[in-house]
Length: 345
View 1 (cartoon, rainbow, N blue to C red):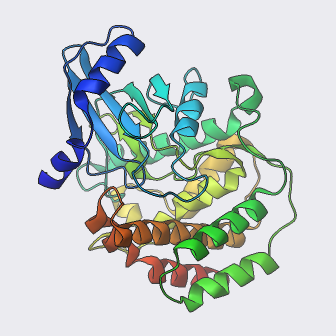
View 2 (view 1 turned 30 degrees about the horizontal axis):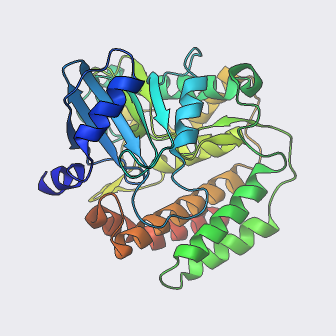
View 3 (view 1 turned 60 degrees about the vertical axis):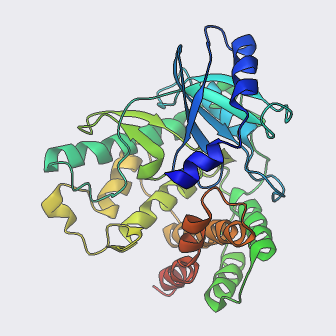
């Protein structure tokens, strides 16, 4: 915890407490801050004070890629979802004033619960595992059923094909953070451009990083209390979220990878990928998910591009957790290879 405590020391806690006492009704200093080991992209801190516990998320220091680390967008989407069926923490305050702690930041309520890091859920029994997966499915379907206009988010994304925009964006981000030539990434980029389906007009709020460790549950898994880390959220294609989450069924479950490949899902009460997709279709009134191969291949490409960016920040020393960033970066070739395996059938 030494390095995390050291990074927390970079925040002027006296200035932060003074600011929050004026800006946040009921807040009372002084503050202690503990940096969480998560929040790889946007540093995240648990604040403790006489008035309670809070969570602060801020932009990282140093030069940043254009449109990345948009904490204002995180705040805005969770604020918009506050009174929907999508569980989110309550947003308390956002400031884009860099003078207080050096970067823009927001403060939200602290949600007391459990984050499950391993999708095989070894700490739960079969009935509890089944419930955890049903809760994830329920919340994802609920998110994609929200009308962005009714929650003040009609301008949260750009019009036109989401997949085309995202492919272009993440290809550029990948090029900007590329550290070595990856033939499989080149294969994926070329295939996605050539095989992109026609825009079907579907446009919903999407989380962008929908996976089990971005969720807080009751300890027994009986209820999903909050979906967190909305940095990549936008108005986009709902199938992108579904395919992104379904990558975990294909990732191995060993060493630093947390997936379900090779895990006996039936014996553990965990649905298969097909069963999970079918339940989502049932909840959203769909007969099937068209272009599933494209959606999956796109997801592997996009995640590889994201992780390459994390690796570049690790090499430059301005990642939230440089050691973890470099370790994550080692997975880029594997993710690209899995994407190629999807398109090769």
